[in-house]
Length: 213
Image 1 (cartoon, rainbow, N blue to C red):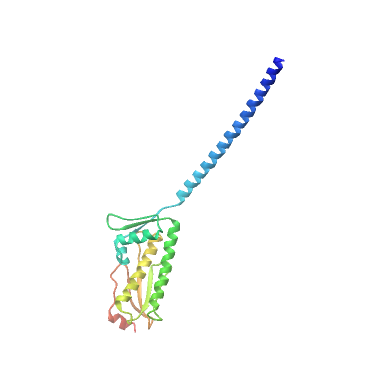
Image 2: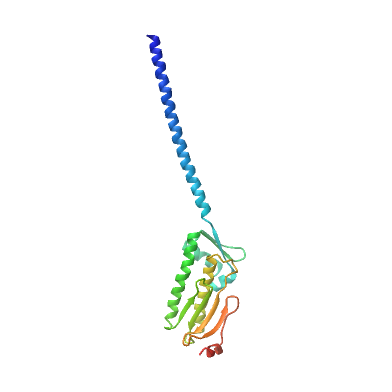
């Protein structure tokens, strides 16, 4: 009887050991599965982080001058807008904006929207008044006449230049590689008054308007 009991006990112990071992393996397998899932998530996040390329956009002093704002004002304004990863003023007085791809699209689209708004504002002065730009934002065509005071006209032209320049910078142009061609037309006749560019001081004389009549 004792042997049989011992044998039964031995059998039960063997069954218990195998049962326990089976559970242990299952638990270990579950832990491994969880670890694999976590590792996959970490790898996925790493890939996403690598894909989240940081784009640096540098504003030179020349660009800040046509914006009409100081480096400090520019940093404060963009920071409050929240459409960047970071923005800071450099030791040389220039400004650097750090953005991702999604924010880059926002900035490029917003330049087009603001150009449309500027056009609407200019047209309030006259039916034939308008601002146009090409698809690459490298050229501005402004149509108005001498009824618009020169000091007001230059504000519209400079702001259009600023929007075009910022579009180029946010689209990937190097700090000093942006260029904007500017053409002023007589809105009464459609004739060219004066052409210029962001590379030089731009202006026109009364004689230029006379020639465009």
